[in-house]
Length: 148
Ligand code: HEM
Image 1 (cartoon, rainbow, N blue to C red):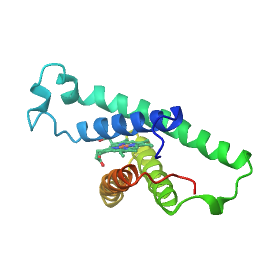
Image 2 (image 1 turned 90 degrees about the vertical axis):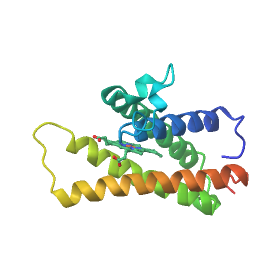
Image 3 (image 1 turned 45 degrees about the vertical axis):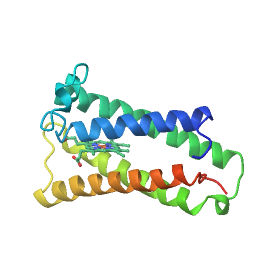
Image 4 (image 1 turned 60 degrees about the vertical axis):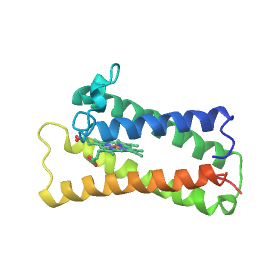
């Protein structure tokens, strides 16, 4: 992720920023801490706006990840070339997609999950989100790439 000038990396960075922003907005924390009172930021306190945006950014992020993986596989590069930080971020992203996807299913009408599963998905999704932010900050500062 070091070369931010590459269109794919720039798009990934933009998607990561907005999916995190809309994720936290759903908690909801921006009204509570008066950030939504800043002119132009009131939409951050509207649950269904940020909820729909989170879904849209999730679709785009999944599409970009599928494209990245296919591009890597079809160019016949060896998986041993993936960096340790790339593997960690990829695993976290997969976890976010699984937990996020399960929460999308949970949100459908007529679908009921156990209380423990809902709790685990929420905490798991939030924990993975925090882990991804931390590792991404490290790889950005240290200029680490996905592929060695
Ligand atoms: C890639 C697929 C993803 C899907 C399908 C997804 C879906 C969801 C859903 C359904 C919710 C719960 C909304 C509700 O209360 O009903 C949620 C919450 C949240 N998402 Fe995602 N998400 C994805 C990725 C991400 C990513 C990459 C991040 C940040 C790095 C993120 C951060 C959050 C946060 C902070 C919350 C609120 C805390 C929580 O309820 O756990 N999500 N997401």
